[in-house]
Length: 112
Image (tube, rainbow, N blue to C red; front, side, top):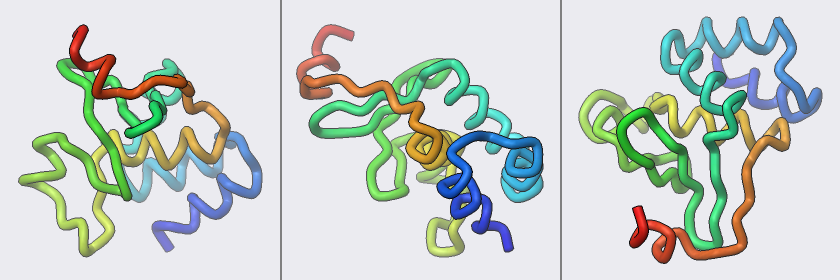
């Protein structure tokens, strides 16, 4: 089952080799990029949104959906497909690696 890595990760609370393999088997390069983003601390939670800092922009992830072009054009969200930004949020939440900011993202975005 491709989604059981989320349950296992929530139970264990860390990326074990078996869980990393399950993520990569299920999501390939998207999974690899998600793990990299989490390890680099690029998942940020604000009062209004969770944001993943990508290579070219910042992407808002909300309820498993994302504002990136990959989500909009390439993925079937009804089939459970997710971009690497949404996967990064799934991973970061389960391993306690979300960088919390007590401010509104809409205010921060004005300065970017």
